[in-house]
Length: 333
Length: 255
Image (cartoon, rainbow over all chains, first blue to last red; front, side):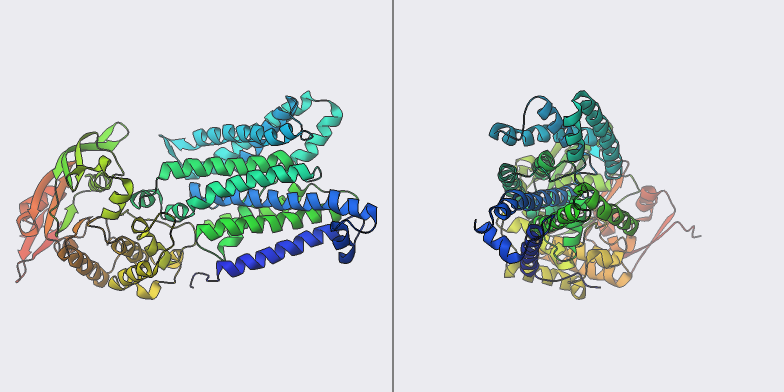
């Protein structure tokens, strides 16, 4: 069998069209179903004021936030897989998301709130600190004589994830009842709190992550031949890994800080994209677009399937992702 | 390329003890020794992958540490032992990575790179696999593709860790021919192997035992029954072929 060969540009165009379609679908669907014409008028600020409010202030920020969170998580997963040389790496499975959630919660308890610009801008940083702490722990747990053991990595991630959950539960029982309930829903992964401010904040962090990772694309290509080969090809392996780790953690942390723990996007999307493209430059870009499409659709499903009740979008992605993980593991065995 | 009194190892254990070695340019050198004798360690020290604890490693008269990484990458090609790909990768793309140190940092491969990659695949009888995924090849096919990656970089020194471990006799000869051609063009080729017939096709041989050089010289000088018997700890018999190439039989007691 020959390797797939389709042009990355064509795949990118398809994904962008799919993203536009998913965003439109997301604007149309909800407890008040709208027609495309009404949605476009409302986007322009015309027509029924209540529809304008629904579209511009509720559905649009939520759809855009879903796109950015999905993109950031998928990009983070693609980078983690490349730098760890592990096709099963994912920010959720490696405990990065759990650590970021702890960081966010600590930040909130310390008084950082998403309602102020300062809080919005700094909550992702609190999440980032939490993520870095777990990355260090996972790395420590998976190191054998100073070298990262790939086999132990996921196991270590599972354990650190459990630790992060425990810390989260302790922190939650501290807070008052009403706030706790909100946090629990957020923790399960939800985009219900989407605002224009959150969209803007995440857009900045996603751009930062993308800008840090894209220049590493050819180094990632070389790393797929193994670290030793990459080193002898002139790749500054340690610098590349450190930068990628920081960027992947920042992306996942920023996503978690606005939307809680949404798992498996970082695992599923890069794998899907690998069927179509091979170079990491294309993989990173298309993973971002693919993650955006997946999460916009998943979130639309989460809020419409059982409307007016809403499912946590993290449950939707886990429902898709967990079986996919098992399949991937079987294929590797 | 020169090692002087080099000691190196992993953790607290030294594998190489005061090894001095300078493979002459334009020659193919075989590195022989038992498992754990230090063949891979020696290649890694030459490649800069492992720091020497004592002694000096030099490239073109300069200490290897002082040579910028990208320049070193251009001048030294390294083939590690047994690599299992985890991600999909087309053979041609793997070979093109060998051209990476020759391109500007963020540039895509140009037509010159593709031509060099295809010609390296051709040279190792792997052109037909150019579009194949590395994970879908046999071990021997993949080994030739990965060696083509080193050839495509046109390095002046090649360090190859068991480049023919899973090759059939015909392809072993294909590889030897390609290496000899590179040496004839001025490159230094140093490879480790357990294949004595393949090693006998080199110009020179280095015998490594217990992390020390047991013998070093031309194949005809070193491929003697007493030395080979000492190196591998088994009875050895050497019969010169009509052209003078030594034919070795190991492990069989011949009366």
